[in-house]
Image (cartoon, rainbow, N blue to C red; front, side, top):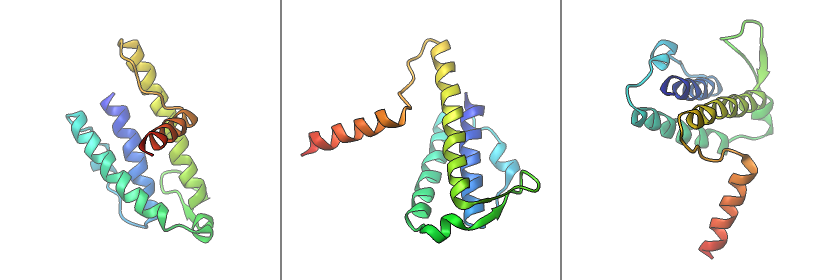
Length: 127
């Protein structure tokens, strides 16, 4: 589970580095942390940096082309890269949920519209 979670976060951080044209140390990122707490910290940091990035995007930014260093010959836009990050993460989150169920756990709901409903319910309760 740590390996898969680290992979999800590593891909997210890798794409963020591409979007920001910053270096990305693949070897360091692929090192699987010893604890879930460390993985959680990595996710939190990437989430904060990712939000800062997307809040400043406009249509021109989303259309900006970029080359994929991990897939030779592939050129995509920042918008396509963002979609890949979401779809890739969701795929592996579903795998983690299945594994948790196999181990007798009860994974959280990861369905997007249920997440939206939960947010709406919480906002309504706050008013």
